[in-house]
Image (cartoon, rainbow, N blue to C red; front, side):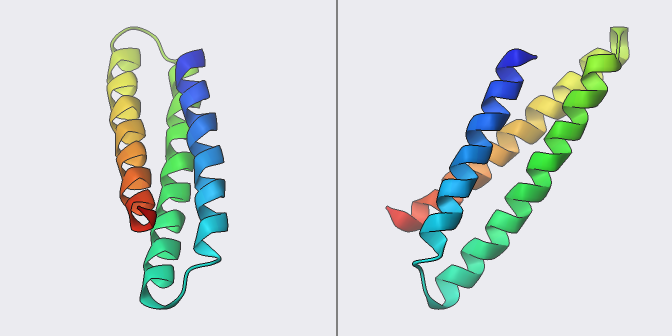
Length: 88
């Protein structure tokens, strides 16, 4: 669970850094990136919620929640990479 929390914290820092970069963008790219950041922030909260549920789950429910959380975390990470690609 600590590993997941560390990944979440790192992604949150990365998203904040990306927000700062977006402020210097302009036009259509800026609007698209702002939309992507909003989506990432929602997904971040979703993963945090799943992590809380996971902490209190046991047995089969724990396995199912873990799979869902891992999937959501992976999706969030990919969304960040896509948004970051605008700056490469």
